[in-house]
Length: 358
Image 1 (cartoon, rainbow, N blue to C red):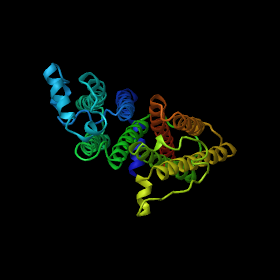
Image 2 (image 1 turned 180 degrees about the vertical axis):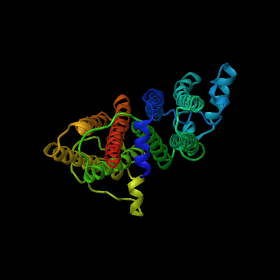
Image 3 (image 1 turned 30 degrees about the vertical axis):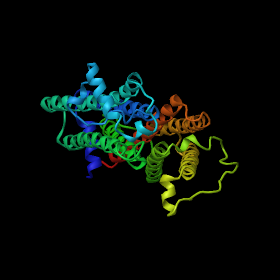
Image 4 (image 1 turned 60 degrees about the vertical axis):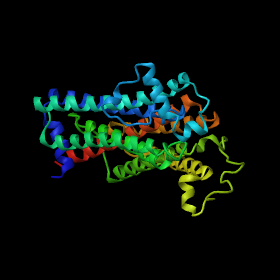
C-alpha cells in the first residue's frame, strides 16, 4: 500500500474526536498565512517593506516605545537608498505610517510560529498525532521558519543599492508562502475522516494537478509584476498599446531577462497565463458536467470555475484602476484562495482513489 493510501486510511480509522482539533489548528494556521500574505501585499503597495532595516527575530517583537527608539529606527531608514531617492521628504510621523505596516507583517509571522509550535507540542503530549503525521508536520514547521528567513533575504536586497527589493527575491518569498499554505490545507484535508464520494479518473487527477501547477506559476509571475511595478503601465484591456500582442516584447538582451525584468513582457505573460488558466478551467468544467457531473468530490469544480472568473474580473479591475491598493490586495488574496481550493479538490480526489484501492 502506498504512503498516500496509508495517510488516507489513517485519517478514516483514527478517532474523529481526536483529529478534529488538529484539523482546526491546521486550517487556522492556513488562515493566518493568508492574512500574512495580504498584509505583505499592503506592505509592498504602501512602500513600507524597507522601513525596518534590521532583523531581530526575538527582540524585534517589541516596537519602538520612546522618542529615542523612534529616532533610532528612523535614522537607520535614512541610510538606505529608498529614503535618499524617494522619501527624503519624510518626517518622523510619516515614517511611523510605513513602519507599522512592516512591523505588523513581521509580528504576524512570529504569531504564526507561536500558533504552530505550542499546539504541536500539546498534541504530541496528548498523543493526538500518529507517527505518520509527525514528520509532515515537522516539515511544515521548518518550511514556515524558512519563510521568515526568505522574508529577510528579500528585504536585505533593498538596503544597499536598490530602492526596492529584488523582484526575484519577492517572487521567491511569495511562492514559498503559497507552498506553505497549500501544504497546510493539503494535510488538513487529508485528515478528514469522512469518505468522499464520486468517480475519480486518472484524467481528473492529472488535469487538476496541471491546473494547480499553472496557478503556482501564475502567482509567481504576479510576484514579478509587483516586483518591477509592471502593473503601473499599459492600463488598458484587452489590448496593450492598441494590440493584443504588443510590439516590443522581449526587448532585453539576452531575451530571457525580459520574462523577469521587462515591464511590458512581464505583464503580457501574466495576462496570457490567465487566459490559459481560464480556458483550461472552462474545458474541465464542461467535460465534468457532461460526464459524471458535479456531485460528490467534483462539487469543487463548479466553485473553482466561479473563483477563476472572479479572479480574472478582479485582475482587470486592478489593472484599469492603476493598481488601486484595495483591489490589488484582494486580487492577491483571491489568488491564494483559488490555489487552495484547487489543492483541496486534488486532495479529496486522491483520497477517494486511495480508499477505492483498499
